[in-house]
Length: 321
Image (cartoon, rainbow, N blue to C red):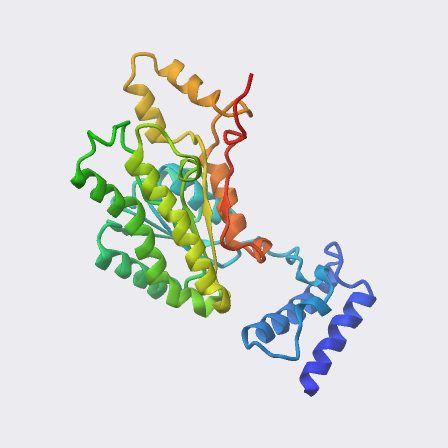
């Protein structure tokens, strides 16, 4: 009880004396000490501590730290597209990142050319359809970095338009395995480690998982399934301090989109058509999706769980004249 009372006195004294202002570098040591004590108390579920008693400003990030400083984040399908955008943004925010993909080293030279410290990157080849490989990848990430603070289940694929009559059972099952089962596996094998760090899960779904898409019944099924899994796990893991959210983009400028447009007679017109689906007037960048994921992995999103976040440029708002 004595330590509890001392802790409460420290927090109140600090708040009253105005020592928490971020511009006051002299308060950083006290700030970090107080927050460390606070986090320890919460982790131990000490009944003497109640978060509502404390000034919100005490939970502000330290001016000396980036939002993901020294967090360990595993990202599937991170060799290109949205996954690579997530990797870059997480690195910029101070994280150490495990880039996993079937050819994980594909972006190595690009990352080096952009000035990223490759000592903070672990490249792991992984086929997310294989449960053994997913489990081993999580294990190797922890073996290398020492812990796991977050996972972004991003790996997946959008097949060309196809009616349900033309979609074979094998096509459907293969896509479920790649897009949905892989997300389940990532969550399953990451969860025991995230409980230890009170970490976070981000599942990369899609706007169409909420609103549907023509000639994409198999794909929409997988994306809606990811949202359902996200909500179920958010309930299951809240008591362990693990948050689970889904990100549901609309159009994102990725190599897959450019490849699709390039296969058409008028690629420029195809790209313009996708841009105009968004009231903002363009597709998102992969880095913009990365920023959303970095936010959800950080303490800034500490009260957000079980949500399907839609950074869609207004695409889901309805018809425009």
